Amino acid sequence: MRTLPRKSPSYAPEQPLFRITQLRSAKSLHPHVKRVVDALGLKRGRTTHKPVLPKWAGAILKIKELVHVENVTGADFSREMRERTARAQREKGYVVLGRANEVAL
Image (tube, rainbow, N blue to C red; front, side):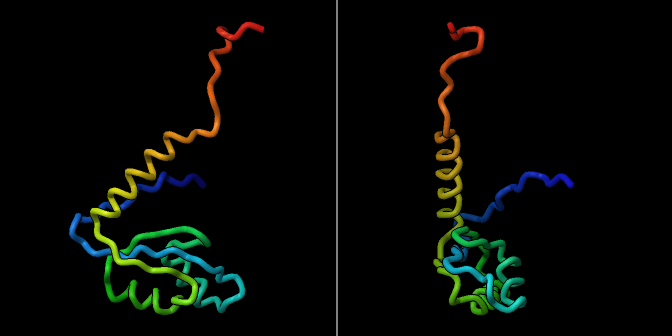
């Protein structure tokens, strides 16, 4: 089954957001807690952004021992996404020495 590439959500610059980072694993916890972690789109060490709404606040309260939460704005989110994209493009992990027909053996 093929999945489509995920498009990052766009938020208004003044919209308040929760920046949620999972710090601890939910591995040995109750399945209800694991479903909340999945609903938030978290994995250990992963950060996600959700709008400040009662349903997300309630989900965060259920797993408050596992996560770190910050209040940010949509402008902060946009800047963070631009920096992340630039960093990913900059750090390829390899260096191209030349083309196959240009390299003398």
